[in-house]
Amino acid sequence: KPVRILQAVKGLIGAPQNNFKILKNGKVVYDDKREKSMFNRILREMFPRDGRTKDERSTIFMNLIKEILLKDFTTNDENSDRKLLSIKKDRKKKDKNQLHERACNPVNQQFLPKSCALRQILDVQLLVKSSISTIDLTQLAKSRTDPYCYIDDMYEKYLTHQEHAMYGGGCNSTTWPKEPFSTEYLSEEEKYQLGATALDCSIMITFRRLSGDRAEENSLNEAARNHIVSIEGMKFVVNVTITDLDPKSPKHYAKYVEQLAASAVAYRDFISKMRR
Image (cartoon, rainbow, N blue to C red; front, side, top):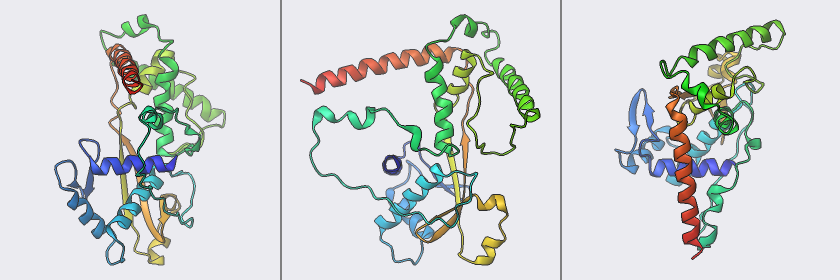
């Protein structure tokens, strides 16, 4: 649900570690090496002279990030003003036997727009889940001499698939495809290797607040208008880029399976302790 995105963003702001950074004009202005006061200072610069409190600015910022992550960049909704969601503070003591439920309930990705960044990442990540039990280890072992030779093979298959789609009338040249990406031309091993690239990827979000001058908005072309997010009467030109899509060697499979097994053991141990 969207509120879970807000909770995740709030957690990243409070404890950035190496997972959250804010840059202004190419320079890092907030990360795990800076005090929280720097984040509040950035928000004051972002929303100057608007009479809002520190918490209100933070809520707007988190909602803006949420809207960008959920935005369908194939559509123009610049005049659709988004309303703010707030995270309610629950001061009630939790039942210790239900602490795990919020984190471990299956995620329903149906609420994610098909062309938004989060949905595209999740679709790729789910390739690991769908193929992990059907992988032929002998096929992975074949590429040990050159652990990344599969990349060229997959790219050739992709070009062939695109060529067939183009002549079949199904190709649409856009950065944000309206239809889910196809992997029918890949083997199970290749699906896993493609999905594994997205398991630890990064998301880079860029945005600029529009001045409110109608002439400035009119100067934007049609493609740029698809990148406008309107929230609380403010308009921002935004963009999302997926980075750190590092290809994995065949050794990744064994390591990943080992990590999953260790996670399962740790979870069972946690549940066992909670029930004592």
